[in-house]
Length: 356
Image (tube, rainbow, N blue to C red):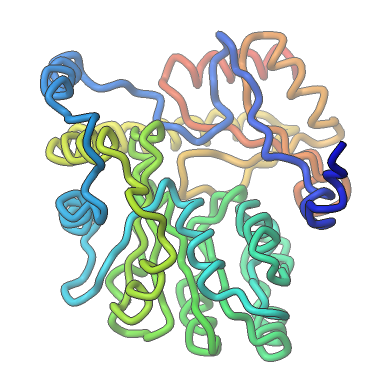
């Protein structure tokens, strides 16, 4: 028999595969998804046009029409370029593959989006994480010292951050961009809920790119992300992008949805309203500490109570949220709840009252 361990890299063998729990018929508040379906009329129009998609043909290799539509909706500045990925994950992978060389470093704050570290490992790059401060803001002395020491090839900054939900100081991010000799990626996956962006600043910095996704806009099932920046960067990353990476169904469906962007925006606006309502309701729990959120989720901690107990009790009541299994760091006993529909949010609050 073939000795698999002999051929698979040791660092890969030490990893665990990315786990997504089966939600079954539970209220699903664990994955930062838009809880709303399309209006019935929009859905029927989409289905009527879908039958004409030529599945026997390869898609537009550069997804040029969709890219133009996204650049318009996402307000990409004139003179900047974009490429699309199969979700933001593929774009992170493209960046790391293009920049990977022996001893090159990927840097990011901690805690943050787990795929930065995982993909750095996949690309055989060194990963350096810099702990956030007690308010989950960037520890600027530590960040600047690490930039000087490691000279990272790329720094990833999620804005707002995941899983904490907060925006970093704009001035701190600008300082990091100025001090970094390598690339800085501002990952704006939750931009729709935050209202703050580095997209208008792309022309101001020659080492800045901005990443967006349509997943939080109600199109998570399409797996579509966009990376925008100067032509010099985007052209090199495009060489690493696999051919036909955006399939015909995704290209058509995303173009169709974005042509009716006002419906997606209405849903986003409702989520923001419901986020503020949920914040107020969580504030009524004396044992809960919640953290500021500019995303479509809220991070919170329950005093003197194990997060695992609350997580399991909610599951027993048919509600699935995210347990952040940090046993000693800043996320110890932390839970994260996605903003759902008004009815789903009320079910969550009612269950939490019964548990606490």
